[in-house]
Image (cartoon, rainbow, N blue to C red):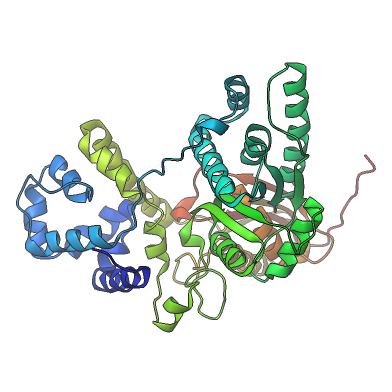
Length: 455
């Protein structure tokens, strides 16, 4: 079926509305919210007796259903979905003539975690393919982190690179790693294609940035004439609104000739209609009233292929149950009464605070919105303990993703104007209720003063 993108979007949204109760169901909340009863009775009847192998085949849209008998409504839904989805098959890029030297790759991968190797390799190959077709070998790496991808592009493929990274610590470390990496390449006589110094820019690309401002920064970094200058954009895991913002910059900036991004964390997209960033981004979706909820965005982060593969293997299928058990455990932990704060002499120790509303639900809008709500909640607890924001002496911020540090820091400034308290910030493995941020506070009942070291 040859459908336009608009037709696919329209049909997809109709399905979303019809099956919203099923779509907006966390896998991990299976036992907590009784997802089974959300299914039509005819589906329950057939799925109850189906084997894991049959369910895996049902979910695998690349192959026909050959085992089991399922309701016509379920098979019809499957057929419609398979006809409107955009292919997720891997792109085969013919860039063998440009592959980095094997000795270079062997040394490069020593400094990169195994799970990141595949995506860096693929992203770099696609960038080179796009650059060859557009004759453009200047590239802007957004959300570059420690600079592994930009290093591969610069030294492995010969790109002239500049990066944008919101976290000043990561940006500084990336610059140092570039120097160390190049020195090691030279000292070990390892062949490479690095001819230009990568320019690392410590700056946030926020929703208000105009494409002309973005272009001015990029042309200055590359020392090029903006009237004739062309470049590509790459982003490995631009999170939430950043992904849609990059598409906006690419669409509006005439100097950007290609874009290669693998977005993530759709649940962090801003879903407020009045705000331009986030979802929906296109005029077509806005004009047709197409809206998604937080849980709909969350489910979009899950690759169905992974579930298909796990359902095919008994040992992996059993591991899927862990998510459901974890949700039940979280429910028990949240239901247990714990002190919001404990006062010892003139010190107030607050338990970790999430960005939850009065209904004990996480607020929508992503990390920044959760941080703002958490800090508001902290204010209420401090007031009840006879303290206030100005009497806070230590904050501990725990993030699901350290890349959200800059966004949380901006919210932080709304509550702490001067005489900033001591603060620590960590990325953690998992937070309760799938939260993005949790904040612990120590405050005093009385006055506090700050101390600056001369070191």
